[in-house]
Image 1 (tube, helix red, strand yellow):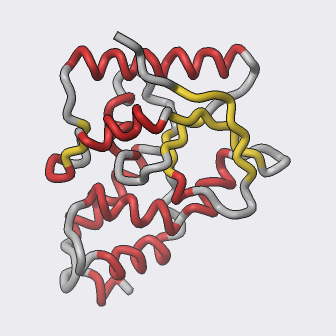
Image 2 (image 1 turned 180 degrees about the horizontal axis):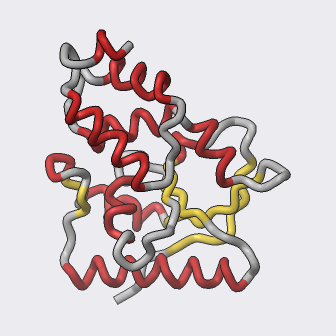
Image 3 (image 1 turned 60 degrees about the horizontal axis):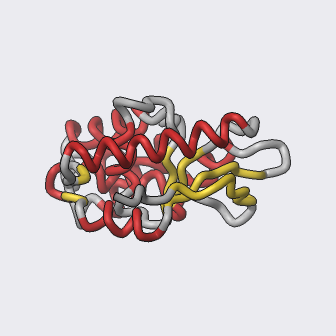
Length: 177
């Protein structure tokens, strides 16, 4: 797998970047064969390490879900209001490493709303995960929330396995101005 992947499809540095992205979000890289196979499958289509990381995360969905769900296979999540997700999706800059482009004030308000939703869920006794339905904005949302909430787990709907029961704890909504 390595001989087919490096350097024909991706450089060693590009593979290393994907592995670093996974480790940064506490995703184990032990299933290295699966990771490298995924990179081989998608490396011919894109060289963007953020996008490649998202493809790998989807392939590792079983491992990711197993890490965060409880004994009853339930994943306790907070979701975002579709209008909020659409606003974030309209600001995603794929060329800049999946960064959400928005004013500092709008970014601050968005992070505050997410923090309030998380706090309500924590007071109810749950350790929530932020679930976004649009996989294209997952890295942008994670990037947006990292400085204020470094331990926040942000998953996309594509990372949820069929045997996982999604238990909604609430919805994060836009702030009316």
